[in-house]
Image 1: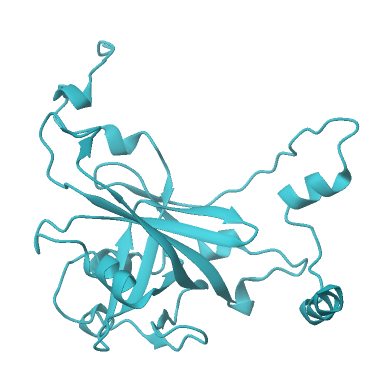
Image 2: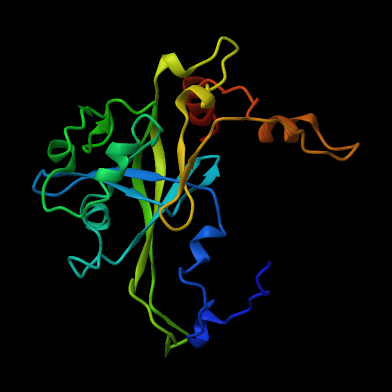
Length: 250
C-alpha cells in the first residue's frame, strides 16, 4: 500500500516522520570530492566530501563543502588546510577505489594516505599529493571560501541540527592529470572504464555503468560555436601566440 504524501518544514523544526532523514536522498547522484591537502607543517590529508560539483568550465572551477567536524568540534582538517595553504587536489573516486574512499572518511589525526596504504603521486603545481591510482586529478588553488552559518537573517535556525556551520571551498583548477589508459581511440574520456562512484542518501552509493547521449536543441540563428562549447568541442588556442598578441596590444 502506498504511503501518504509528505510535506514538512525543516526550518520550523519539522521532520518527515520517516525513520531516516530523506533529504540527502533527493539531490542525487552527487559526485564525490576526494580531496587531498597538506598542512602548513607538512602533514598530508585525504578525505571524501559528498557535496562536490564543478562551478564553471571556462575557466575550470570546482567546489566542495566541508561541514563542521562532529568529532573534532571544528572545521574539517581539509578546510583548515585550504584556509592555511590555499591549495588542494581533487581525485576521481571510482568503483575500484571505493574501499579506500570510504576508509578516508574516518576523521583520523594521521596521514590518511599512510594509514590506509594509499599510494601518493607528486603534483606539479601544488604541494598536496595526488592519489596515484585515480584516473583523473585536478590541482587547485583556492579561489574563495564561503561560510554558510547555522543561522538565517540573524535568527537562530529552528529545529535540531548536528552539523552547524559549513564551508564552501571554491578552487580554480590550474592543472589536470588524466591517465592515458582512460582515453578512448576517438579522444573521449572512458567513463565506463573509470566507473566513478557517486553518493546517494543514507549509506547508499552508485557508480556509472551506462551512458546515453542527447543533443541540446538550439535556435535556427544560434551560432554553431554555442553548441560546440556545450559539447566541449571548441579547439584550444595557442597560449604563447595569445600572450604575444596581448603584448602587442598593450
